Image (cartoon, rainbow, N blue to C red; front, top):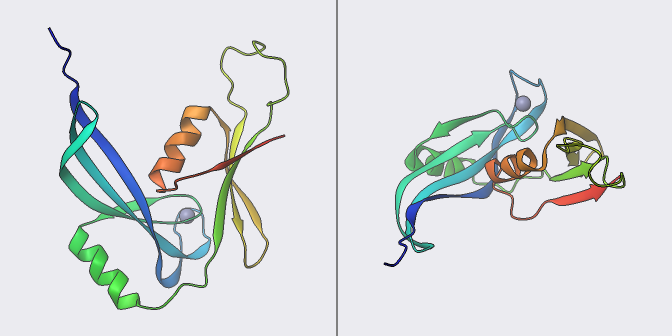
Amino acid sequence: MALIVYGTHVFTKFKGYYGMKEECPYCHRKYQKGYVRYSKWVHFEYIPLFPVKILYLKMCPICGKAYELTGKEAKEQMEYANETSEQKLEMYAKHILAKKPKGIMACDTSYEFWVKDLVTGEEICIASDLAKEEVKRMKKQRGIKKLQIIDV
Ligand SMILES: [Zn+2]
């Protein structure tokens, strides 16, 4: 009997920064919001077949607080903004205990998630004491393909 692998998978893709700079009610940083496309696909034998849910997350690029928009709302807002954003942010993670001997901790939660503002040079630590899985989750939520992890 063949094993049939059927399920859903979520893909995220960062689409850019749009709109006016607004102060975030959570972290009080003033940035343009990031737009992330979120799509949930049904897959069969690891091959995506069709999307079951597509929405956008309009996200504070610093703390990651986001709310959902429909594809139509997001596209309207992105089209309306219509200008190239000057905002340049780079996300990366630090692995604080990377050089500690293995097996010293049951669970390594020494990762930190950082954002660097490439315009002002400011570096902001968004979260610390993270496990690697949490870093991966944050990366995915923000729609980033590659995230540099710096061993400290
Ligand atoms: Zn925020």
